[in-house]
Image (cartoon, rainbow, N blue to C red; front, side):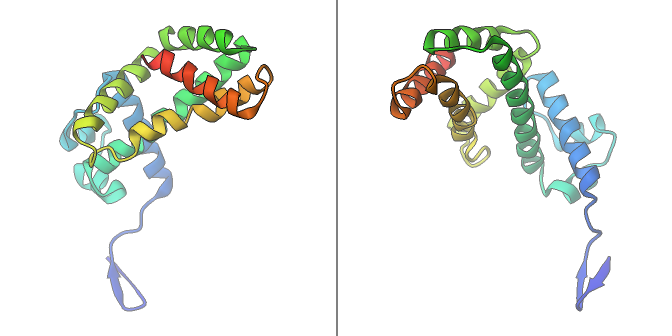
Length: 170
């Protein structure tokens, strides 16, 4: 404990360590394709203590939320690169490219994890606040941008992007 302006505070967080734990937790959840894991099991898998995880994240659910955010950004980065390679020019091309991305063995564990979280978010919205919305809105701007070139206007591009996402998500 240390004092700042008369207040007693705990040990300051090491942000680099926090980011490392977040990335490792994301990797673990993706590999397991599940977010159903105890704090003790997370600590064991991350070679740390549950106390340190609580110090860095506040709770198991906060760590899982941070790990899911990290995993989402990893998947988005991978998919951006895959879409750039495929360079879809219209709605049909985008849906085809997305089908290839979703079925790519490298991406499947991410999508399986996110499917589980989306299902859990329906029954436990307080545990995964905003996950469903984020999992849609992470993608729409990128898809809309891709479709702007082949669409008569921005409204059509956004509607087609929404349609492509709906088709892929089922």
